[in-house]
Length: 554
Image 1 (tube, rainbow, N blue to C red):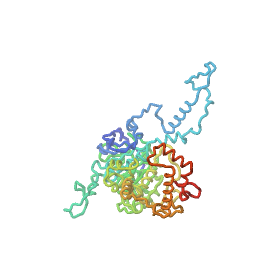
Image 2: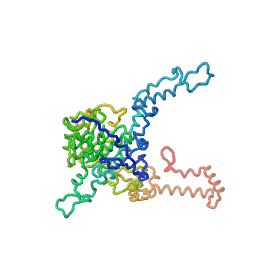
Image 3: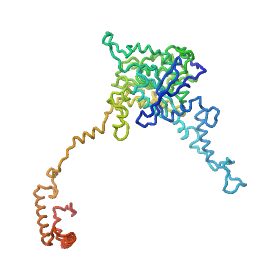
Image 4: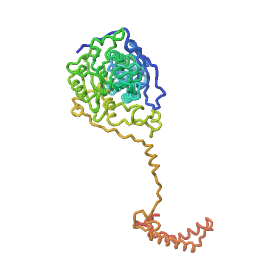
């Protein structure tokens, strides 16, 4: 194991980052996130691009110029710690609530607002909100901006799936800044690798005719390492984040483990120099939390365990302490991401004193990439729809759940919860580490399976129901038998007898009171009222129309 010794440079890594493109107006969903492409200097002073996403609040420091732009001599706005700022807020609030006593030489009823007073007995200190473990302290802790360094798979940072994952983290874990550096300098592995029929080796190649291993050789580990550290410096210097979590998928997962361990492919000495440049390499990434999904191309024994080859301390000189969560798929055969690799990684993490907490889970029945492969519009479950198609075709005014569900959603929820638990610097989460929890399910490798929920298209269901609808005429003969003959309906013998009797009574009334269809309205009302007064109409309310309570049905 090696001891950290900070490298120094007259030029601060990361301070040169600038925005070169933004995604304003491209997203039809108003989610409060700002998406940009930035550039910064990486290995050999070469420009590296990155996808950056975060809430507008979390990006304020970047727009203000980062750490270098903070007014160091402004004592009103700069504090040595978050704790000091909390006390300053509480003291200011207390002073505003207090008033000075009225002196005898003052006009009664008038006060000098500039006089703090000689006695503050009129207002007691609110000890319910005095100190850091208070509502004010909790509010300040919630505003702390974390940085997430998302290291992508071999397809790079600008695929729909990786950008969707970055957006998901930024939205669900606000306030955070998610930075996804382009570790392949604009030349990622192709999504459409093919086998040349003219060659007998059966090896898939990209558009340049290179095999995967030939393509990998174009991106040396040392250069990639420096680019990753430079990206972390951007988060610290330009976005002024309080802490960094590193999150990696596939190839990026292996690099995330290396960053968490403080391990370098060229040995400890390679930390100090940029093998492809003429200035000292950037500082450690120094994440305090790491999330890796099905990591590849790493050596667990060299990174972790009792005989690890990583740095023991952070750049600051403090003992290295990091919480690591790893997600694996049961049906994964890629080296580094198999269930056997998960078992080895867990054993190494359990032995390493630098590991504050760890959780390694294998999801049954899943394959490599299951947690993020279908997040974007180019995912398998989205039928080629673009974002606007999904939004405009959505019912109830909200975005469609992109058939995520199941194990993929569980993996994401666990990962974001892990990150939020262990990246808080001010008022960090306290309690028993997950691996020592009384519920042993958290410390085992096996993860309970959560099947993917079936995607429902409410609009299609409604249209199908309308298409199958048949208007049915009311058929009284199909109605249940009733003790009341009226309710038997037309066609029954009892109903017809009642109607015949009613018609006879009606004709008798018309004849007796000389009611004619030629009568005007006034004459008709007079004759009808006379028949009612004489009780002639009572005969129309036959027993068949009345229930046992005497209340007529109609």
